[in-house]
Length: 335
Ligand code: NAD
Ligand code: UD1
Image 1 (cartoon, rainbow, N blue to C red):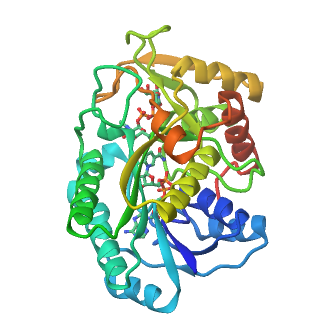
Image 2 (image 1 turned 90 degrees about the horizontal axis):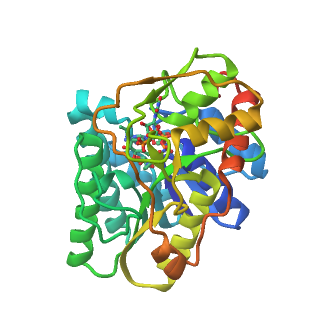
Image 3 (image 1 turned 30 degrees about the horizontal axis):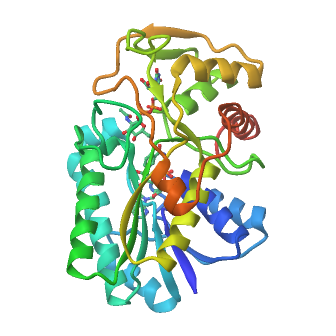
């Protein structure tokens, strides 16, 4: 009776593995290690003192996927596996469509075959495109401007159609805002390969001295200090939301979509200042042009998750910065 975690060697999947084990679930982890290292899986085992099966397979390899379902007693799936770099998705759209969409089609095909119909899917707030107002609720119009975002939208639609065709599926679509932070032990965290695309890992690399300065993408947005505002959420809070979603599926039929955020927006400079406070390091920065495709303000309406899942994020921005910093200091080169 195990939960299959696809992409379980990655940033969010590895934290989900720890929290699931802590809550007494059995797990099976699958990852093709295209954007992660096996060391993260070893660290999850070490942190939890628990052994579990790990399969180095690709979701595009449907035969190997089938063998996992044949071998293991899987009752539900948390599906994190996917490629996530927006810029890369513009350069390599076919890679993204194939990996994310075909990978998911293979997964649900095999789940259907083995009558495993409880699924928690990692979507993203990117599916709200450029929202007209904040906070953003689940019923806002959806759009995407890049192949990565389109794969998330397509998968959401595929899952809706799947449910229409067979209402014995129980599906949670979780739209993440901006996951940051790391496990408080400092043993697992975000391990970007190459130059980080996202703000928090960039800041931690400036603080540790791996990069000279932060480039702040624009300071004339309609926000308090002019820099972009986002809803940063601690990765451990985020994965606790997944476990609530999993319990919800066990008790409720249907397909539901939830925002996972804190409901509070912070600017780029808020993040820089909080980070300076916890790290006691200077974060030199320079304001440059806006990043194409960026929006000014984005934060979640979290009421639905609060009401239906009984879940709320708890950790503060300061704690997010503290845990990101601890991870960076104790693992200066990543895994
Ligand atoms: P990550 O890259 O750290 O983890 C994803 C994992 O999936 C990686 O370990 C990668 O090797 C694996 N993977 C990719 N394609 C695969 C395939 N075809 N077969 C098997 N394994 C495969 O990313 P993350 O930050 O942990 O994100 C997890 C999920 O959450 C992704 O689907 C991502 O799009 C989504 N998401 C992430 C964020 C974020 O800011 N981190 C925000 C919104 C949504
Ligand atoms: C990015 C992704 C989005 C994804 C989201 C959550 C892009 C274009 N978008 O969005 O698809 O759903 O992460 O993971 O990659 N910033 C800087 N300097 C930097 C990096 C970022 O000033 O070096 C600013 C950005 O302009 C933004 C904020 O910091 O205002 C957060 O940026 P980032 O971490 O990339 O997240 P999103 O822009 O929300």
